Length: 456
Image (cartoon, helix red, strand yellow):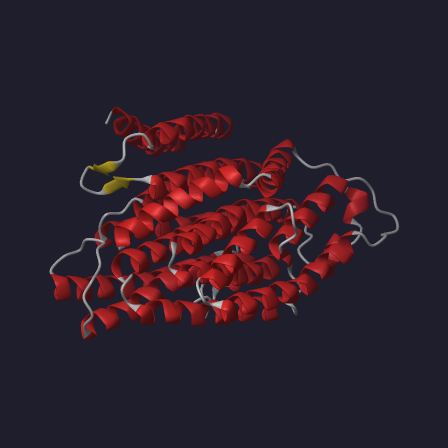
């Protein structure tokens, strides 16, 4: 039990400390404080796994929640470094990011639908302000993100009311089929589809990504989207596990999301819009594992969520660095290999991992997802996934071709140490768990096993 109090105390310290430091000011000490608390949180979360159970009547400590606690904490650590390097208002990001992280913790440890609602609200509102404050031209992007979040929360509220009206309970537990519950299912998919960037609920997402600063985009795609997918996974497995229709709908949405993301990405010229549509297609791959609704399928989806989080943050770290030099288009990376070989090679590896290059986490995630679909009798779904992976090669090839094209008069461009650290860490994770994925496979299998076991 002591581990739970330590964890809760550190989360409270992170939030309250950021409020105090925002008042006092001081960008450097604010960064040191955040990095120190987040670093201490990692072993605290690891120890938290030894005391499973429900605490404070709202947080469930289990392999699923502990895995995502670790993922969100590690990625927020990296995002603080990118924001410090790229943002003039890092103090605002640190404060808002601390509250958003608390909301993320609530979502993945929820024991009731109302906790998911509160967690998503606590994440979405600070995220909209992070986008708003990230750059002068971000008002439109922040407004669109706020509209998407508002519609999502409205649908989610209605769905929660319908479940309560049908079962007289807000607990995340299996429901009996009825007209109200089927309507609630549609509303849940729609509301969490906005958060997880699932087609057709993602139409404003590329505008939001392009209009935000690079570090804000890295947070939206690297963290917020994973929270939406985790929430969708929890609701479908714990509430609708006996509804075959629910997972059929998810399978169809997986195909539509993959094709939409990949086909539209083919014609993009802006780097952030390209990665926005790429991120949408990645959500489609993750939905395949959820549609299978087995321990192997859910585990594969969780592995891909882990892989994509670090891939996206690493890639957007490079995009944010280029953005600071007013280089936002694919043509602006022509000759990047001559200007900064580390950036060019790292971005190449990230994009090849998105495609599914062997010995990277992207390959392992897709391999596990497609294998689970085949074993689950959804061979057609795995085939569509492979086809979409082939399509994605073409738009990533445009960027890679530009980077290695000779540019006359190019010169070496130095990368700041904070961005370098983030990219190097994401690169190391991508290759290490791509070459030796067994520890991560074991972790995601445990997380998926708990979720499936609780849902059955």
